[in-house]
Image (tube, rainbow, N blue to C red; front, side, top):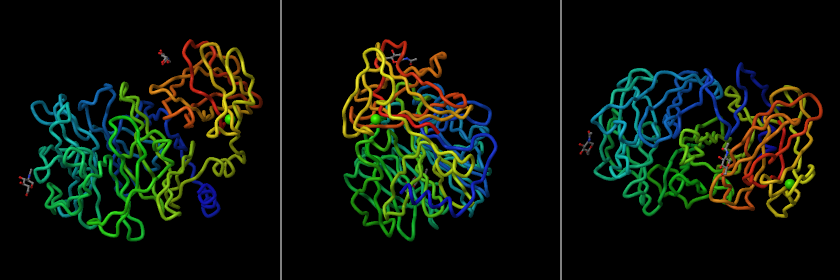
Length: 452
Ligand SMILES: *[C@@H]1O[C@H](CO)[C@@H](O)[C@H](O)[C@H]1NC(C)=O
Ligand SMILES: *[C@@H]1O[C@H](CO)[C@@H](O)[C@H](O)[C@H]1NC(C)=O
Ligand SMILES: [Ca+2]
């Protein structure tokens, strides 16, 4: 897959953009004003050459409704916050005491109107409804039409899919049965169930159509915790749907994320997921990766730092980008080749690069890795394993300077490795990076780092 995507770069030049030029899954994403992007449970709408990103504003670190935000971009990297698309209305199902999740917007050409559907629920998720709102412009603000149970049945996580007609994709019947129902010609309601997957226990759905085949991407149900999201295919939305297939190795639990939206890109797509942080919801991160269809079944390409060429409909890997821009490749450094300090120790494991990682970091253990820098702020990905059920964190000090603290998710096992990005100011030439100094808690085990 990597070689395939690398081959793309030979076909088209890279477009340089101002501001950010790369997508870094799991980093704190900022909008063009420098504020944290608050658009969880994403829905993307394209109008002309502009992308609109709708999502849940969770800056209040609560599951309760604050706003459906609207961001615009022409490159999928630099996002400008616009007015809120939907705001709370007291005394309704979209009050600040209720839940509004997974907003999705499609355009209804008959009425020249944008129609937003969302998961509308009570604070204990007992109401299980859809909500609908409309506007004449993409960001609205939208006028709320109401919330109800489609065809009288539950609807929790949902998505929309447009294919001539429009369809609601939703977890129904207490999240047991997954349904696809057709919308009426106004997109104000559903008319009939066209497909029902009994006992599928699916959430967080999106559909991408490729060469006449519908690919449904969805997670299973594990609350805010990640699980291995799956793909199903069919040649009709009415099914029959295939059995489930992996879009990533099961052990990494979709790289600690849950599907929110799947955006077609050329002959592939972009997987757009959420890395939920249940005890700090506003700090939940965005996990967007290339979704490669070339093997015949969509596979996430777990790329630490990447960019998109919309004109060519391609994703770029950093190595290719660097080759094109600065003729420099990313460099990988094994933690076990660093200088161990204090009580840190080498750990063996088949999941680790080189069969070895450094453990017992923090709480008196450190490792110092010497890397080459370019004299600028550079993305560095830490490949970590954290078998706890909770997050850890590590201190990071560059060239003996003040430490920063980087949060480290639980990775789903002591032998499961995930990469976590951090931006560090490196000087030109040799730098030391020390992990785990001055912290009394244990950091995750460190397998290697990649400097981009
Ligand atoms: C949606 O359609 C159903 C079934 O036709 C109907 O019972 C219900 O009243 C409609 N809801 C709205 C809000 O229009
Ligand atoms: C790092 O993790 C420890 C242990 O979980 C926690 O007590 C501490 O508050 C965390 N530090 C930061 C800065 O988040
Ligand atoms: Ca290693």
